[in-house]
Length: 223
Image (cartoon, rainbow, N blue to C red; front, side, top):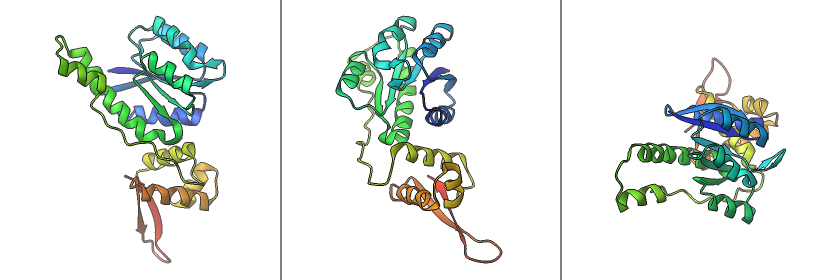
């Protein structure tokens, strides 16, 4: 079992990441934190294999504390999930050897790919006793090709898009635009715009559900 700690100051995103982690039988979410001080306490008191780390936290910029995290947990792996595309944040994270750096503009699908890759990486490196160049190359380069991050169109926000995906994933019976608008606290028009965008990406589908009378109800489902 791989123990995962989520450090994210936005509780909505933290819940999305927790739901995603819980989809994997190999991953165990041991908790969520929203500050440097709480993250250090959790690292001191618990076995943590993987830290999902936001950059902007209330008490500091997290990349400044990567060294401290590694002192507390020398074998800790880190996946940064942040809105920051600041060159110094990215360079410092990479130089500290983070497993991955994911921008929040389109993070959910990208994080899912990274977690899938990380599970294979973790089990390989734990089980391997002898190494050759092919094994090392596999571990270093992960043999994982990600889709490039696309610029979101006008009217589509990355965090809201992740929330929409989350609600679709957790509602197996699908959602109407009206139901989604209630979950988001947004208008029906806004909800429909995000749903139709996910359909264009082939991340969702729509089906007409026929009731007793009247027009069929359009329900959206995650793919």
